[in-house]
Image 1 (spheres, rainbow, N blue to C red):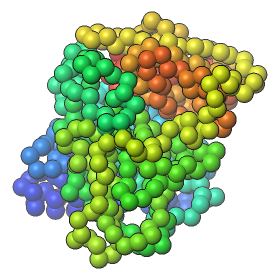
Image 2 (image 1 turned 45 degrees about the horizontal axis):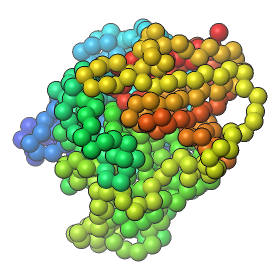
Image 3 (image 1 turned 90 degrees about the vertical axis):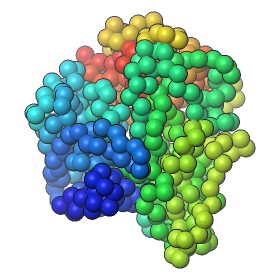
Length: 485
Ligand code: C2O
Ligand code: CU
């Protein structure tokens, strides 16, 4: 009800266009915040078309859960059961995938692999106990519904969590240009690369190199709005604030910086880091999440920003200010990473010198994949030369210790994601991580870069997808599965 009211007020003010800007930054239209103390949380999520207009002059025919982009922020307590009645009015078949959750395979939301998709006008009941604790998210697993707006954050609260004076959910997302998505799928997109100067993405590419797989974006948002329409975040001196940040962009890596502050990163994809890391900027591949804390030491106004070289990048920002500073010009950051200490897996995992081998441990199943394809004008993105569904999967038995190693022969980073498990990164580019990093999505370096994951096959049995979370690469075939037999 409250949502309805805010949205229609926005519509009156702005000439008939429903404005997501009316949504608060601090809470995405809360269905329950904080989590209710009941045994089960019952939610209805309805997917339907929605005109999305994050700023004047743009209106985008997207898809929304319960009328909002991003979808409602879901909060549950660890151990609570979640029952989501999914009502699909999206206009096509649809599912919801619970990214980062370990759950029964039939609840994983992969069309035609773990469930028949809900037809348009149909429903599906997702019923499971969300775990592990932490910052997770949910999205459609039917292309291109994630690109169009079917995504949201879900937080599983851990009763042992460090106390925060404020716990803020921030979804970074963007509005894709439909024509560039089509062109990128055929490998002939002319959209430029917009990673910030000084980023590894930019260093990986030759100056005149054309990839043809870039998607162009028409708007950049945080929690459904573009700066200066993003709702400011009011903080007080002395407060310790926890940010839960999700990069819901379907293709691009995002760098995130809060001017005037360092960020203490405690969780990666919702999982506690071996030890917190202090950085000036976060680096989030598509689908990655970080929990990052800052302390308010002085009065002021600062911008929390997504950095990129896109001329419209300034839109992806929100003001953080202390009382009385709402009128001040906020301090911002340059759209560049030169000289900026950014988060890296090597930093968080204490990477050791070249040549050190990963911990010697028993491994029952070993698999390596060469990531390839993606030449200009080609739609193929491959694993060992094959495209899904012809890629060879990882066959495991329950209890196996599994090692998966990637060698990336393309010149793009790939945010590789495994469903239904938390893996540990144990090796990157020949260096062992002294403290393996627990994650569900990780960027594999380009131009021959390697990465090794280890995990225990102790999730519920079934078929668990393993794929690149760049939607263009996934649809181009960069996908396989871990199969319990
Ligand atoms: Cu977040 Cu297979 O996806
Ligand atoms: Cu990829």
